Amino acid sequence: GELASLQPGAQVLVSTGTAQFQEVADQLEGLWPGCRRDGAVRWGRLQVVPYLEDMAAALAACDLAVSRAGAISIAELTVQGVPMVLVPYPYAAEDHQRRNAEVAAARGAAVVVPDEELTGQRLVEVVRQLLQDEPRLRAMALASRSLGRPRAARELAEMVLAQALAGRASPAVAR
Image (tube, rainbow, N blue to C red; front, side, top):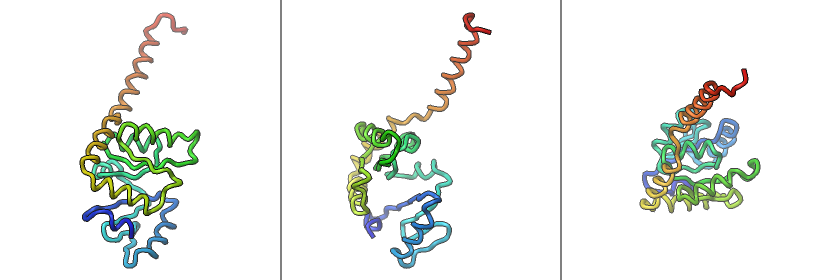
């Protein structure tokens, strides 16, 4: 019910992960009378899927993402310049997700909602406020894109090759 009230025309896509999908789908069928279930659960403008096959396309179409704060998730979001609501996983090793989220928030790309504060109502409130504030959403998108490293794999490969070639050319390298 809360999600449906977000904003006129808003579409919501939720990826649960394959392990949690069945449980979530069963719960949603009880909450959403008349929902369709065909490998996904669909109800109006809401769609819940177990897995996103084409994450790049989903992110390219995304105006705002709600996500955990793992490094790979943030990297994918920032390469696309997607504003973020980050909910750090509280049991991540050395609390690294909280630190990742704090960096994104400090740069203006994210709003952080601590896991212990996460309720449906709180999440919908945060998302609604952001969707209704176009200037802030645009600023967050620009900040997100500024954090992105779309050429990271190429840059890393170039550094490794440069080091390998430098080692080969050096007369001090033991044979």
